[in-house]
Amino acid sequence: MQKPFVPEVAVIGGGLAGCEAAWQLAERGHKVDLIEMKPVRMSPAHTTPLLGELVCSNSLRSDDPQTPAGLLKAELRAARSLIIACADAARVPAGDALAVDRLQFSRQITALVVGHPNIRLRRQLCDDLPALPCILAGGPLLEGGAARTLRRLCGDRLYFYDAIAPIVEADSIDYDRCFRGSRYHQGEEGDYLNCPLNRDEYYAFVEALLAGRKVTPHRFEEPRYFEGCLPVEVMAERGPETLSFGPMKPVGLVDPRRPGELPYAVVQLRAENRYHTAYNLVGFQTRLAYPEQKRIFAMIPALHQAEFVRFGSIHRNSYVEGHKVLDDSLALRAAPHIHLAGQITGVEGYIESTAMGLLAAVLLHDKLAGLPLSLPPATTAIGGLYHHVTAPRLHGEKYVPMNINFGLLPPFEGKPAKRAGKRGRRALHAERAREHLPSWLHKIGVEVAAPADLLGDAEQDGGGVVDAAEA
Ligand SMILES: Cc1cc2nc3c(=O)[nH]c(=O)nc-3n(C[C@H](O)[C@H](O)[C@H](O)COP(=O)(O)OP(=O)(O)OC[C@H]3O[C@@H](n4cnc5c(N)ncnc54)[C@H](O)[C@@H]3O)c2cc1C
Image 1 (cartoon, rainbow, N blue to C red):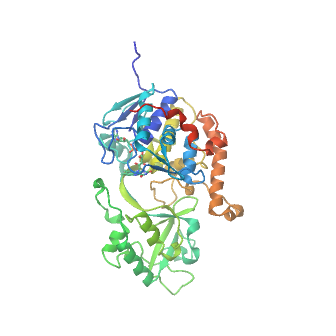
Image 2 (image 1 turned 90 degrees about the horizontal axis):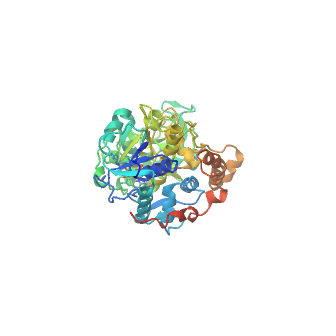
Image 3 (image 1 turned 45 degrees about the horizontal axis):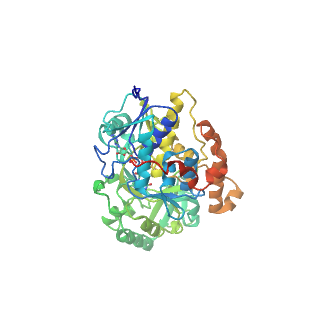
């Protein structure tokens, strides 16, 4: 007689993070109930009953390990990620990027998850979070009572919308065209970098904002803006001077190099991370299309060569303020048996969500096994994401969902790193992460990857899943 399936752990949400988490727990010997609402209930963005569905692009971004996305994938591959193995197996030609045949990709995930003897898939809407230790991976469009429970546990630290201003690399700012200081405290080492515009520059900028191409919101993302965080282009529509009385207000900001002159308008930049390697444009949340942001924000003189760590956006997105509500194991402080994974932790993107699924499972396994938590080194891409989610914020630093970027990793100090230039520093990041990853892999029970494996070609690990039966 078949033994009854007695789950030890529940995972809610069979997306990228949930499947990764369920798989990692199952591979470590835990019996997992995976609860997915599709097709009983479909989010506005999902269209198939398959697990691990990609809701938009079929690209998992660059596979070059000297880029942030490539490094993260290399680390996930080395940590034996299910999602990356399935992506490798479903790969379609896309230059340096890892793009996939989305149906093949999701079918393989579904087949492998359903076929795992330690996983039971239950297709139902999860309204009440289980009393079992669980991982909530309901994604950016979390539905039903689970969202209400999370709201009760996190209060106003749970958000349902993103309103994100663009973030630029510190190295790409023209420091000759901006000055440091806080409002009314010119000349001091202030918290802001102030980018002045004269009258002509300001008017040209406002005109470009008005004419710039905007992203059309999805049907389920009809604009419901809060007055306090209107998109800059919506403010510009209210009148040509609205911005100069709003986020571009110059009062109290005098350039110490021009003490008698008040700029016509000022864009303020604030440090985005504790390393001061990236700055956000304060109050510049926007729905401008990405290429338009690049073009139009380059009209701010200090940003004429700006490199964007991430573009501004406004969309529906459920996420918590991780460092306020989660403990080191990614569990809710208010309910320590509930762990969060995926986009809902405050990361953004397919591979970032996958990484936070893998990590949540590894940390829950440690807890169940009575082991010390295997926290990833801050110098790795996985560690950078983990620290983004859990580390306390600098004074005034806003918590915004993040794609992986090298600004999340500790910078390199000293002249050699400065002289190395941007490309050289990317190589340094990849090299350091490659050195530091194996000790963590060892802790999480994965055979230490040889460097060639970590940085090697994508086909290496995917072979085992190519023949998986279709769902
Ligand atoms: C419209 C849209 C477009 C996007 N485009 C991109 C893109 O092009 N590139 C990119 O990198 N990222 C994109 N993202 C972000 C991307 O969705 C996420 O990064 C990623 O899919 C999140 O993974 P996840 O596992 O956290 O959530 P998901 O993959 O969304 O999985 C969550 C799962 O939980 C299920 N679920 C939700 N609530 C419940 C419940 N109460 N009970 C049971 N099951 C539940 C859902 O059905 C879903 O299967 C987009 C997001 C959206 C909303």
